[in-house]
Length: 274
Ligand code: LIP
Image 1 (spheres, rainbow, N blue to C red):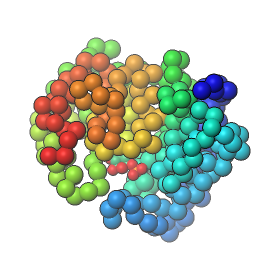
Image 2 (cartoon, rainbow, N blue to C red):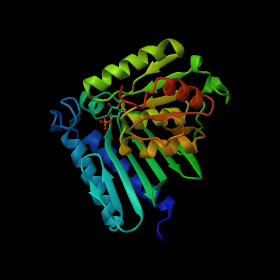
Image 3 (cartoon, rainbow, N blue to C red):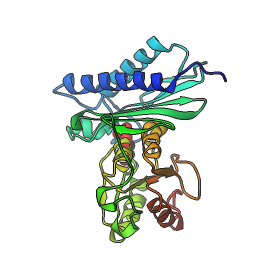
């Protein structure tokens, strides 16, 4: 499809809307915020602020680009005719937002003909805005970032020296399997971190705040922007055995560690329900 869309302009709109959503989430958070509804399990929660900020972002997109498609975690699902699709997580890290733990963000990825070309992850509580444009780089607050931690000095980090982020699903049976996997990994790495937001975990890989990340069960809106940010920061993102990142498994790390982490996960068939 011939698309009349400039990725730079798409990123500018996404960044503006993510910033506005972040402002509302901070300044207008109800003091008595509670759980408005649940999804896949009693702990997979939605707040009125998830719903409100998804609506704000969708309205902002359609006001500027009425023919675009939209997929949002809280139900937005428009086909569109322009070839441009917006993939939105209005609050990634909803449980953290409910508990007033800083690790939550607004994530917006923008696709042209199915390929993500622009992404923004806005982390208000940390004052960080991560952005990326395909083929042009990734930035934190406008400064270029690379997917290497300071102590790695740009060299591949061996698994045993890696700080690895991960996350867990909401279903008890899946969590039991994920917990057993982490127990096997823990003695093989520097340490594990569980932030509670896939988008933040991916941005942490992209700026070297962690060395790697993996998670089974992420949704498209969790990873759309963060995956591009990692790739444009020189990292690799994918599933196991050469697959694309998906709900089955998302792995992200700089080259070298990416392959080592995938190897550990592949022999344990970590992308399957055992
Ligand atoms: C979160 C993911 C995270 C996962 C959490 C949760 P949400 O998304 O970003 O990776 O480990 O359990 O699913 O539900 O906060 O949008």
